[in-house]
Length: 133
Image (cartoon, rainbow, N blue to C red):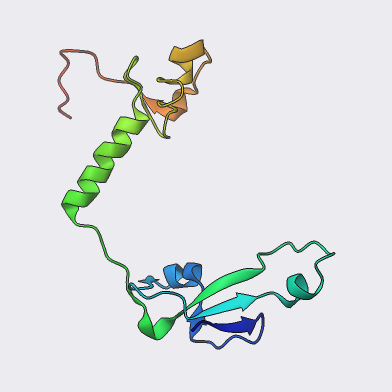
C-alpha cells in the first residue's frame, strides 16, 4: 500500500527519484513507497499550479548504489554515439546527435545551411596517417 503525504509533511527518509540520483542511488528494483501530493493543486483546481501535483517517493533504506558500466559497455556506447554524430555524406564528426532518421545527414549536406566550424571535427584525408608524431 502506498501512503500519501503533503508537501512539507514528508519524512526525511523518503525522497524522489531525482534526489536518489543526486545521492548516487537507484531504487534497486523497489517501487515507490509513498506519493507526495500538492495541497494547493488538490484543493484549488481553479488556480494554475506551476509544479507537479504528484511525486513518487522512494525509501532511502531500500535504495541501492547505482551500477557503474563496464569498460566494454562504455566503449559500445561511445561507438553508438559516434555513429549518431557522424554525417554519412561528408564524414564530419559533430559534437551533437544529427537528425539522421528524418534528414539523413547534417544540415550543410541536406540544404546548404553552413555549420559552425567549432561544432565538428573534420575527417582526416584518405591515406593520411593518424599518428601523433
